[in-house]
Length: 155
Image (cartoon, rainbow, N blue to C red; front, side, top):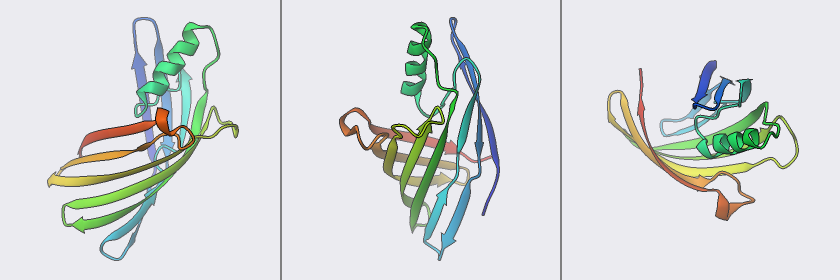
């Protein structure tokens, strides 16, 4: 399965406004009844105004705001490659792992590599609950540990 994705992210503050465009080509390749490879979401993020807002990374957004406050330049966007594998343990429970590499400001200098593992539970026909743990930057483990929970609603 292959799709196209277009999204807009906004940051509104009394002192700063930011807007970014996200482009992706999400895909999923199923292997049998229980395994799947997936990826392609949020491949490109481009600054349209102010800062290249990343709705999934508030620390990044605050760092960009700090650069603006000092009068320094901010990123124009990023290129991100993420791949994952999922195992359908039960009808409503999946275990997954992801690995990614990013190119902040479209640069090939000091790319962050990320890795996460998680679990998702389909609580109802359109509701998913989940959690994941991992690292945003594998070369800075102590600074980039992330533990997160999420709720997703399918439309």
